[in-house]
Image (cartoon, rainbow, N blue to C red; front, top):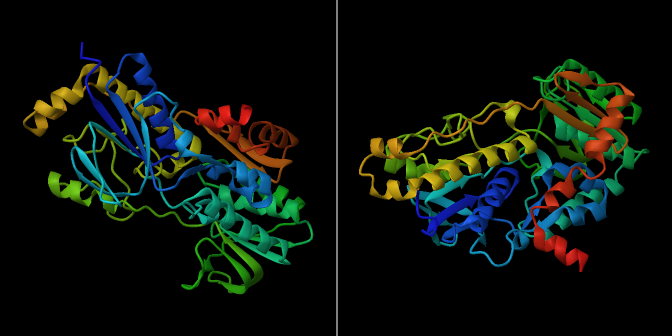
Length: 414
């Protein structure tokens, strides 16, 4: 059995759904005899933002305040674990990362959960709670003063934003324009789209399908407050509005692996998207680095896996595999291995991540919604409203996330 008291360094880059899940699960090992274990969580923001709840935060100032949780409270007192408020600059080699401030961190195991730049203002740009809250408030104040709102993009984020805005501001003209023939991800049942169109219509939202909106180069990031006319390139329609919210596009920034690619002499990224190539076990595809895991949106798994709760599941799978490697003493064996083949042979068999959950919950305002469960679409039915209301609409599952921040909960009780 491997020495449990040995020094083990785990570095987790990114504190959103995948990274937080992995860091939390691995941190618990220090209570199970691994006295030399240190988990370092790195994130460029001071606070975790519950991005899933953005549609509610947009129209509810009190909820927006509560949706930011301090990373300083992530790890319990009395452990070696640490939060570092910096941005990853580069993965230097098989054992070191460098942060934006020049600081280098040694790792025995690395979790790259950097995610992506999500559609629209759901991806809050501010790096502090105050900046993030102000960013959302500015957009909310724009909505307060607007007569018309344009939402571009009919995925889950766009549908939810359009629904919550229309319910909060029943006198405003809300238009949702989507480039495809139906709303929501197309790997879900068509009944979901039909139900969403029906329920958005009940709230007065005008839905336009099969029209791609041209976004000018001078358009502000994610949203714009101020009267503008955007052009539909497919239909020739002009869309005039006082506030425009983009819920389209998804960008990855993975240039940080270039130094590691040079060390390995092997590309680690998809050439078009930049997504990091992974095995089913969520390890980087290159067998020379089985101790590097990539859960969440930044990996090259199919688009059907790009949901917050599935990123969390992947973070748990990555952590489970790292636990196996720690228990086997892989980190010690890796240090003494003199070639890539020896490294691969030293690694224990890892478990593959299984995308077994077929679930989609889309609130459309606080009282309506559509859902898919076990390939059954609950679209226009009242049952869908009840289901979504009970499971998501109330707080967008924020209460579940607060369990990751024990010191914040304790302070609130006191």
